[in-house]
Length: 127
Image (cartoon, rainbow, N blue to C red; front, side, top):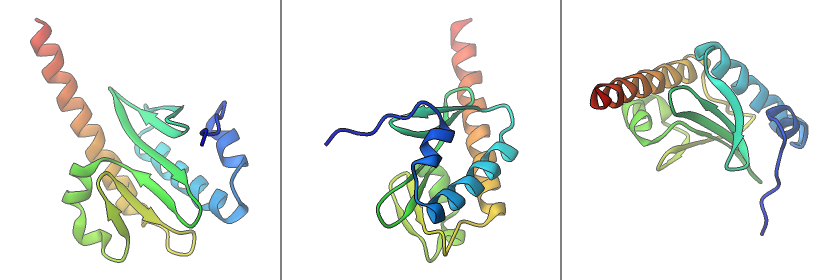
């Protein structure tokens, strides 16, 4: 099955059902507030944010939405993720049960710190 290609995050959101679109627009706003320097793009066919490397992704699926922050931040926030389906690198949620704004902010900030630390290591190796 071929993945649908989108020109922009706006186009991706426009293609979603109204309830999923609203939940993802809220998540988008939360991500942008937590990472104002991040570049918004489409990667792997879904909305992605890059800051000194890949930061976070999100997407809509048949029966849920997913937030993809990577596995390390999921492990660090497990107690706040009770009641959500969590798999390696992804947190599934629904429009009826969205992720808390404070949790999204914390996860995005943790990912920024991870990417900044990784970037410093890369730069120090180049010297």
